Image (cartoon, rainbow, N blue to C red; front, top):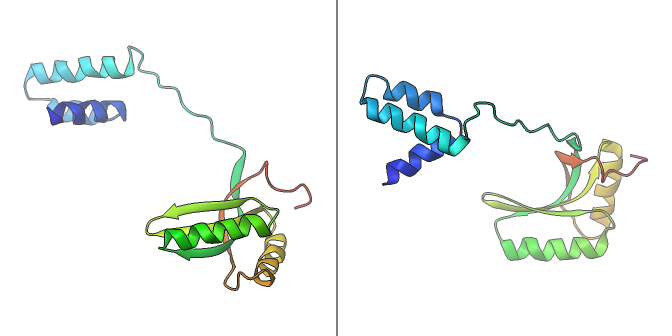
Length: 142
């Protein structure tokens, strides 16, 4: 029964052509089953909706306060950052590390100002990182 779920998953992900190429030359029943399940999962239309790229995000700068494998330490850092900064605070998990980042900047000079402020506020190891920035949150003068 597990192969049926794999088959449905591959069809859902759009790998119908790969499945058909593997099924060619084999049982016509398998070929029919793949086509039939493809219609059930994707509908009769072969045209899929494509998502428009999100124009609200681009690559910019954040100030990273911590990178640790200790979740409690990262959560504590996040709470401290929320209390000490007016900028947005981000809590990320990128295996195996938890990360706390502050701010959204397009301009590296503005990010450096916040990084120096973070050091003054007790985050001695704060550093700049590039990452996805929400343009709606970037202050207008940055």
